[in-house]
Image (cartoon, rainbow, N blue to C red):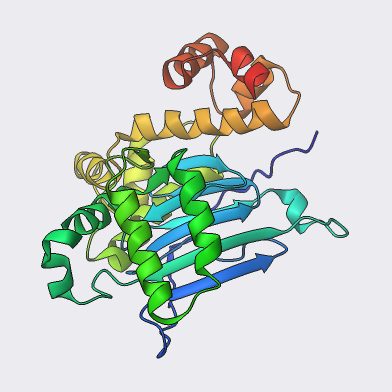
Length: 296
C-alpha cells in the first residue's frame, strides 16, 4: 500500500486574492486539475466548495480529516483551509483528476440591507455559523451537488438566484455538521495567523516528537501561561488536546493507508505507550484502532 507523506508542514496561511468579475457579483469556477494547488490560505470571502472528484487530507481551522468524492463544505470568512491531494495524484502517468465546483462571495455581496430582510435572515445566520466550517450531510449534500452542477451552466440573474436558493436550503436544513468547533477567526487574521501557524506547522512537522510547553511557548514568543490562554482561544483546545487529536488523525490515515502493526502505528503517531494509544483512540473515534482499520 502507498505510504502517506510525512511532511505536513504549514507555512503562514496566505491571503488568497479572489478575482472580482464585473459581470458577476460572486466568483464561480469549475476546476479540473491534476491535483489541487492552492496552499494553506484564507480569504474574507465565504466559500462553498464541492469536491466532485478527488481524495486526500483537508485542513480547516484546527481540523484535520480526509476528504473524498462528493464532499461539500461551506467555509466562513477568513477561515484558513487547505485541500492536499494524496501523493498518487502528483505521480507521473496517473489518470486521476481533481475536480471541484467552488463559489466564493463576500459576506455583503448582495448588499448589507439585503441581509436585513426577513426572508434572508436564515442565510445571514448560516454565514455566521460557517466561521467554524460546515459539512453537508445526505440527503442535503446530494441535492446541493445536483444544483451546483446545474448552476455552472447558468448565467446572470438565474445564476445568482440559484446561489441564494442553495444558501437558503442549507440554512433551513439540519443536515450540516461543524468541522472545526471552537475555532475563532479574528479580524486580525493575517497578523494572528503568523504566530498560530508557526506553532501548528511545528507540531505537524514533528508529530512523533515529545511536546514541550516551554519550547512551544517560546516559538510563539509568549510565556507558557499566556500561550496556553492564547492557544485555547484560537483553537478551542488545550495544547495537549490538540496534539493528541493531531496524532490520532495521523494514526487514522496510517491505519487506512498502510499495513503496519498497531504497535508500529502507535509509535509512528508519537505515542510512547500502545495501551494509552488504544485508549485515547477509542475515546476519540469510538472504536479501537483494529476495528477502525476493519471498517475503513
